[in-house]
Amino acid sequence: MADSSPDSPPRFTEVAPRVWVAHYEWMHVNITLIGGSDGLLMVDTHGSAAEARRVADDVRRLGAGPLTGLVNTHEHWDHHFGNATMVEQFGEMPIHATDWARDHIEESAARTHELYRAGDHPRREEILETTLRLPDRTFSSAVQIDLGDRAVELIHPGRGHTAGDLVVRVPDADVLLGGDLVEESDPPFIGDDSWPMEWPMTLDLVLGLMTDRTVVVPGHGQVVDQDFVQDQRTELGTIAETIRDLAGRGVPESEALEQGEWPWDPALLTSAVRLGYAHLPRSQKRLPLV
Image (tube, rainbow, N blue to C red):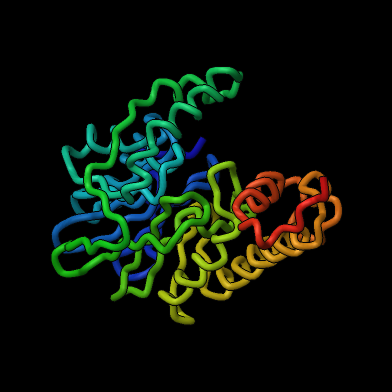
């Protein structure tokens, strides 16, 4: 477990002017602070109250200003289970998310609790004991947050990892926070609530927000750049086109993982294939003769 004593070095590292990122070993989660003259905006809050208290300690040790707002990049628990703790530690503040994420957080959290209640994970109790705190400032396409002497943009670029992903753009620092639309520690997770056929086009829009000097903070893993995101978009595009090709040639869904040539381990693509076949329009699938 990481040392969070007062004498340990600050965990938050400045990756661009007044933009600090802390990388946490559990799930390789990134927490980002964006500083302005009116205070700090925190993007994502980690996966339990216990971990969020460590994050809060790290914020205090950084000493960059008061925490005045939170952003949840999507509805998955590892990005918002620290919300209530941040409010307890620093006082009431707005919590921003997309409309979709806010409306589906409770449903998503219930699935997480059901999963951990049934298992013996070493963090089971701390996850089940975490209090849910919903976002209270939501938007559908884009919104700007005023931090005093700098503006921060929240943008919903489309469906991908979930239907409610947002990215955070700090224009004056040329920083983009990708949430789980971009992951460095592992290939992006394509789960049962993902949109694999739309994800590549969503990343096209995200790439349009970047320059060749943009600092990109993924939801999990180390800081990356535009080239990394382009490579990940290419891989996701290959997955989508492979699904489209297989379905168009009449390959049954049950045989697609075996017959396709995939850029990732096929074991990671079970949901991608199932959802891809389901999301394709009828005109793009060769249906078996009955």
